[in-house]
Length: 328
Image (cartoon, rainbow, N blue to C red; front, top):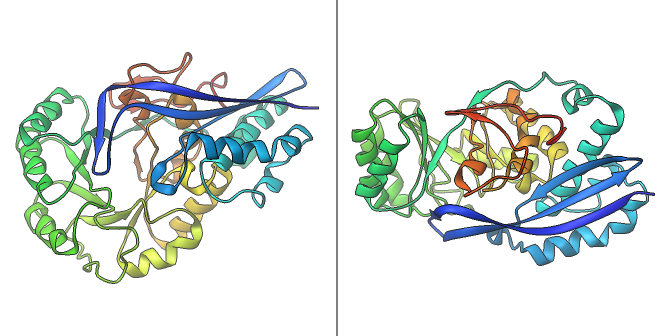
């Protein structure tokens, strides 16, 4: 008989984390631990209000499966019992971790994937005044790939200020749905000759018919809020998106993330391995899938005031694979 331990944890953010729809001083995560025969598997998720999630309703979702989990629920069975989202992610990752610990094999071995390699990660700058974002970019001079949060058309000034201060850096601009369709072309024209890799979720996720086409010489569009599972890919491609930000809390776990990345690769999408702000326990499962990703955006622990014990190691802008003791 397994034992399920379910917790809610609060982690302080380093300063504040500001995007177009919210400003955070702390984050709340839900963690689960499944114990069986002297081994344990762990998973962490970040309930996200944008997707109508809260620590309370995610906890309730997990509790509905307590009997099944403690009675031997398999990874395969889980996929049909909960929808894509944070609750399924936490359970899925904990079951994979437990399976790895019990088998004595890494999750990469179990999945037949290459062992994870150290990768360059993007580093996120929160919304602020152009002057302050310029200072933040200079402070982050060790990071060659910056992810810039903006809250509307006024964010263009901040992007240009950052590029002036850091001409050595490449940029991912993340609007979190804050731009209007008419703003998008202004951004693209002003940024066309600058090293901007992509504009992430420029407009509301529900808008598909008015996205301008993406010429090859302009920043491409990356879907975030409008992407959850592999079933979304065709619609996004037809809408003009050519990159996607995969997050395990959106798609519902490592199992679904692998399926999504494989499908996206076959369709020709550029893939970014992303995250919610969270601890190293939430980042570690995505590192198992790093070989599918063109870009890594796993700086969540760097945005916290502290990380959990035994967390991921970062060497400057490089994230190292997780230790087996942390996860997997």
